Amino acid sequence: MPSTIKDGRLLLLVGLSFITDWKGIMLSVVGLFIMMQPFQKLLPECTLSARRDLPATIASRATESYVVLTLTEVKMLPADLAGLIVAAGALSWSTAA
Image 1: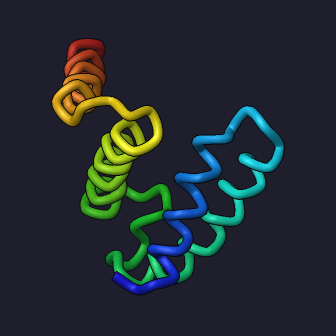
Image 2: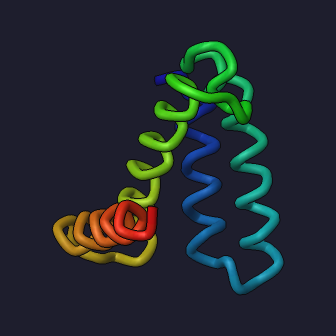
């Protein structure tokens, strides 16, 4: 993983831990901005656009993984509880669909 993604991820996670303050919001935005360019090079073409099939699947899987990472690192939840939260969201989505 390129170091700019790691640096951006660090800024994003620190910003999310202080999200109620304006400094936390700014750190999160800067972290996302730093991560975007190298992150797009790692993914297949058009992954971050609103297209069907493979790009949408990859983007949704990456989002689910990042939610678990954020819940465990920022909110200090155990990994099994974070996994149950994501699973509950997926089951409710499937039930509603």
